[in-house]
Length: 370
Image (tube, rainbow, N blue to C red):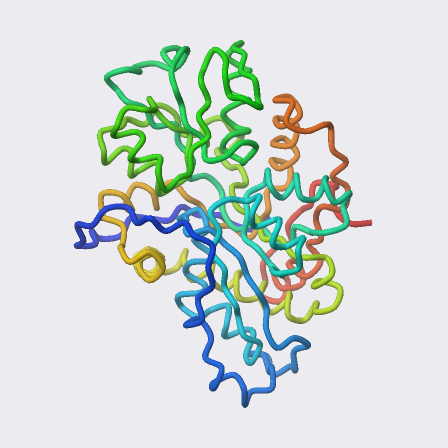
């Protein structure tokens, strides 16, 4: 199993701007210069001719997608692709990214476990494969301390999650169930009011008092804390070894079949990115913030990015056993029927890349393609 070390603290970044309204689906042509790549003939860093002229990569402008943010910002993924151009696309939530992958407008994506499971199940296993891990942790329950002082105080309160059926929504519904409380998964009504709210508007809703708290990923969680919220629960404390998958890397099965060399090059880039992040935590955090600023026009204030960064682990390991547990939680919440996840993973290329750099192989927990 590959090492997953904490993203350590960076010296304070001297900025005073607030959390950017980043979350919009768009492409960023600055990531690839056509004139530079045209003469390379798709030759990758290892000198091999690649089979595709471009690869479309999706991700969220969230710190839980640090591998994508840093890998794109530093050119570490593009370097492995050589003349194969990256076409990046930013998404707000998993379902829209899955739609793009299914619709043929996306080849590879960084995404949470719940939308990956839903996409795999709805296509009856025909549209995607998980090919690597990316991150663990970085999810917190932040509340208004004037209204909520203990976990039991959540009963009767309004708590936001990013979207119905997304990874945090499933986790919160499961937590509610384990408390012995009841919530209708469709409407969000019950002993706790689950309010599905876009991450970009959650901070305003919190400040206005229309929600009492939120179960959200970073950096939204730390933004709420900076606005007077209090961390009542870090989701990592609910998991063995405090590790659970928050971000995977998925690929269209069609693209994997037709361009395995390109997929392998991307994975070389992500493995090197994670290694660089862990070796250069200060530079990595600044790099991620620069990427967020480039996309949204505003960097994250140090009081937001510092605590957020500390709670995230980057890892090549997909932590496959925790994905199976999360699927069980979605079943328990009655968001999906019991899925057959056999074949959701194909870690062949990842393990090839890891072996080449002297790292141990990672497990698919028995859920690999046969």
